[in-house]
Length: 115
Image (tube, rainbow, N blue to C red; front, top):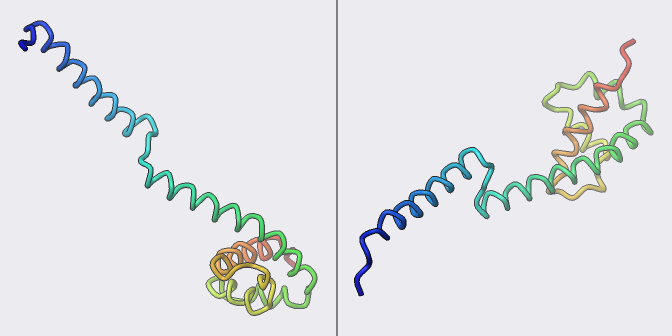
């Protein structure tokens, strides 16, 4: 079977257009691969869990006002350990405990009034 000569430019044009569409889609169009989409989904779920448990931690912190000055005096890098030791994140899974403790400590210290 012979392919007419006039078909070749059309085929090459379609192939070139498809490649150009893929390049534009991935570079500027926001397209992602399935693996990247999965990573984005996991990160979004973890963020949602941290955001859901942080208010519970802050509530527990407010129930122990005698601990708050000690938290504020603690080094910024050790505040999450302080929150964990105080037991404010005991209801959080071990996998998310550190992130919730960091967020909780940050919110509690930022929300404290300066005397």
